[in-house]
Length: 370
Image 1 (cartoon, one colour):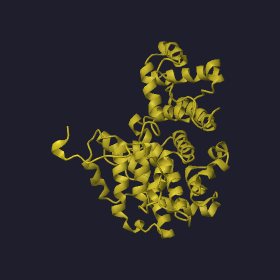
Image 2 (cartoon, one colour):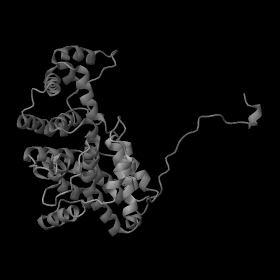
Image 3 (tube, one colour):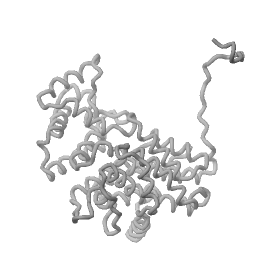
Image 4 (spheres, helix red, strand yellow):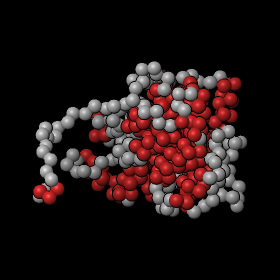
């Protein structure tokens, strides 16, 4: 299985991309394999921006969901339903249609996530604005209301842009493999990305930054931090510090350094360092970076720890965290999906398994079964 797409981010230093690029430039890198020149960048941005609107009838889909439905439930349903609005994208062998579908998904995911947020609040949907950048537009759609102007804070917009960049693609994880497996059957791109969203929804995958907030709420009080630190060190205690360490990065998560600086900028800009949960988070960060127990075991704060704090500080509800992750990861999914369709050796995925059940089983008529 050829997997060039997932290596493009790795080929660049994350810090270099985060420092110099914006999210759409990274999208171009993943889709085409190179950073764009100035003319290509303008054309790509225009191409994506022209697809940010949703078909007006999509609005009616939201009425079928409860107000308290999880945003990821809406994301799975609405993204999958886009295949009914764009039947041309079902021709996955047509390279042009694959690219159009890619642009559509990159452009429409922030609109869908923002609409899911507005639906949960009972607020009117805010339509995208083509004069705003990608991250700015996302924040505007989430927080603006029709009755008054909303000005996007540039520091918050840059923070959101960095979150999107650092979550754009990350090796052959569960949701990416799900997209590729669904795509191997020839399924349309909207169905494949919907499958990826469903996989990402699982708490073992995309729920890490939500788990950070749940942990902070469990600690509850600044005075109880020493108690929970001791519990985290006790191997017989089920409590674990969420957002520390990483399955892949056995030392410091390189993305975390970038997120740490951004996190502190956001907290200073919003003046919320004394907010109870964020105050607990900053103390945990300090302990983890200084305490020999955590340093020796490389249990440093990871990207999920900082992104959860940033999103919380911005006023994004915890239930929307994974939806933001889905917006970012869409480019990774769609790049891998598109790439697999250019591979002449690509076949339908068929994971093998070893049967361990009974080798013989006699049929027993229903009236004789105990």
